[in-house]
Length: 169
Image (cartoon, rainbow, N blue to C red):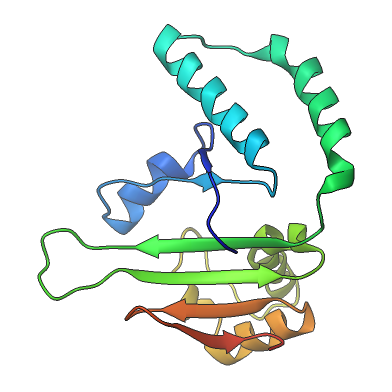
């Protein structure tokens, strides 16, 4: 996905749920577009909002829509997500990165797991309730198969090098 300026996502439920359910100390969600100036602009807005204690930036919506409309011809439909997991205070434990990337139709990446879970529930393949670890309802083989169907690549980096796990090479 390359180096790019990213910005923090507005408060979402995962900021509160993940520490509670997974025993982590902090969670950050950051996103970035292909256009660096757009990413930096949104970072500035977030910082100004924080510094001045602004609760609503609704007045920015028309400006944001116009900006998105003007910049949309310069983007692509590529998409990706990268998760970094690190453990502070545990000697010998390195950071682990997992990355999913699609050359086209990247917008589907966030919807793959929820849509697959819904399909499996409707077809009676799973009957869990609540938050369940991924490995309890979806095998690695099934995940690999579903990603490949959607032409999404999955890679893991545990020791400084990326290893391709799933999807089209």
